[in-house]
Image (cartoon, rainbow, N blue to C red; front, top):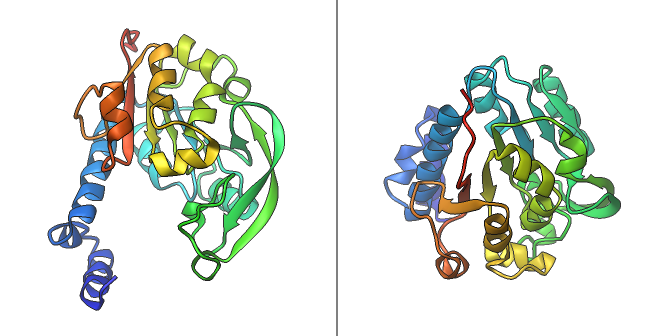
Length: 248
């Protein structure tokens, strides 16, 4: 990052004005558009007592907004890094926080925790983060599934941010997604999902099988399989059920 960009980013954070950075840099503009779109989706989908599920909650950046919009909801957050999970539970005492990774099956697995870049941590190590930048440590975590953890709950929104493991999380939530038909907001970058052996269109295929159509989080789409697999600009996606039940 250039010195000018670092300075502008610092000013943007200090003043709480992310649009200052976004005005000059395309990637920052896209990130800001996606952040605003996510807020709009949550506002549309969550009643004051609606239920929100956060898979890969990190420090609760999105969870905070869900709580604001649905203060009477029964929310559930998953975070496998012990210290981060404990911090999350302290910060959001009304939320059920579980120290777990989610995937396609129950197991114990090695997890790469980047102590300097916790948001890049995952069940597979990202090759984009060096030892110097990330300060990695490898820990053993418990992995469960959405189906097992949610039981008969009926969430309105499920958010998935797992650094490439989203296909496994969705696979482990087949019953939930088929039964409850929540809106699914998920991060997907083909190079990250490839670390888990997933083809670029595999997430689209599975969501389609479960009765969902896939759009960019900012509303473009629905995407065809070919367009989804070929896309290199969208990071955050929206999957909506084709036959969404009434939540009145």
